[in-house]
Length: 267
Image (tube, rainbow, N blue to C red; front, top):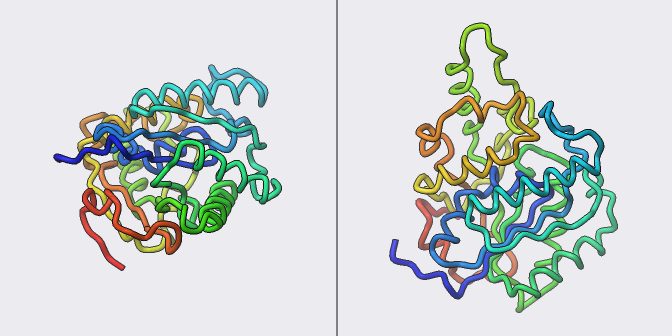
């Protein structure tokens, strides 16, 4: 695609390391490849993420440090230009002072002059409380910016996508081997996208699905029982190559470059 995004700044705002890759890895990699400055803000270090990698260090501080390094590696795979990590407590975002979170979000938006912001839709991918709180705080922060607000897009997972990943992984499991049970720690793959609002923008990111997969695989601390290691890069354009976004009814409502990237568009 002949599209120059060198003057664009894209900011992904998520709750934990690995959210950026599963929610929006294809879009982030695509826009970076088109020249945009792409930044990810993680509100926590994911220190309570319940590491399911036996080689991961014990203790929340050590796990948080490990997950921050995993995010850096994932950022390299996606081509991110910068990563910001805040120190809000993992698992407690619904109870963190809302004004404080909103100020943190707005500060980064204004500092980097983001014109497009991506975060979770209201379903939080699979109703994770931290994800839902992130959606709410980012929405409020952007709305408060008035005429200076960037365009805000909500990411959700296509319904059935993670079930397809799990089914493929189960088919690939050798007889007698331990079968995968989770997708990045989530026990029910059908929870992803099951009640998500309809997207306004469906993006075919299959050209960047391998980068998305490589980024996801960087988050090893979450993958001992995960289905992702059981699929191959060759599977990823089909399994991970479609991403859903919904333009929020606030902030900048003028057309953005996502209208050029979209596969379908509905209101």
